[in-house]
Length: 167
Image (cartoon, rainbow, N blue to C red; front, side, top):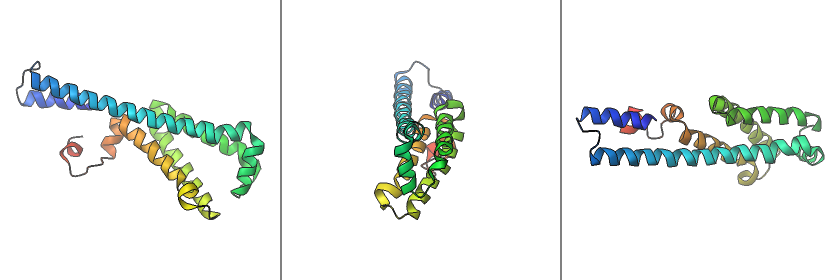
């Protein structure tokens, strides 16, 4: 939506006719890029949501014996299982709802930071366990960045570029 507004504004500045082939082609290409990026972001966000629900929340709520063993290995008391599951569920649902997605991402970031600290504390393997929550966080924020123009404006990747200045 922002890209279309910028293109309309730019074509008005150059006095292009709205129906010219060059302007129409540029708009179509920009719109297609935005659509592809948006869909990639939605898929990335969907994978994060599915992972959080199926690999983290579901076992804690519905397979307490299995999750309890895992929690013991991580140094957590099994009595905290349900409260952690509810916190994860609320944060994930906030991330899943478009209106609250930024709040959910911030809260999930804190949750993932706690997971990193937990794995680091018990000296789990670095790349497979300790920084795995970081991978999830990159997917989460990457998906949000691709599908949300406000996040792209807030966190531009190319700080010195023309595109970042115009956003």
